[in-house]
Length: 87
Image (cartoon, rainbow, N blue to C red):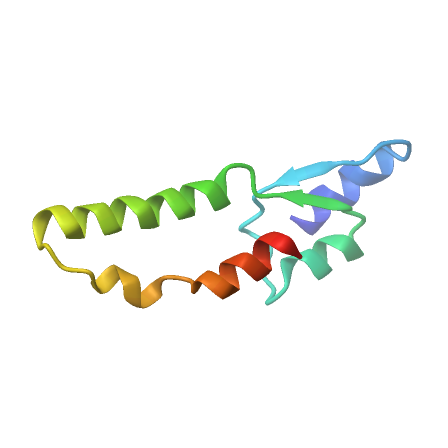
């Protein structure tokens, strides 16, 4: 991947290159590694929304099939959600 980024980025010096979902960067912080290669923006596309919808569907399935509420153990608190949406 670094070779690809090093090849592509210099060719577009007057615009930003958008890399979407780069799972092959082998580092604990891919954003730092990609920035060092010249990448200025990394997009997750719809991944965050799909992760949220996945949690919603999992919770709904639990309610429908088991009638339980254990999905609430992973739920964000109202105050955390409020803080995240207002910061």
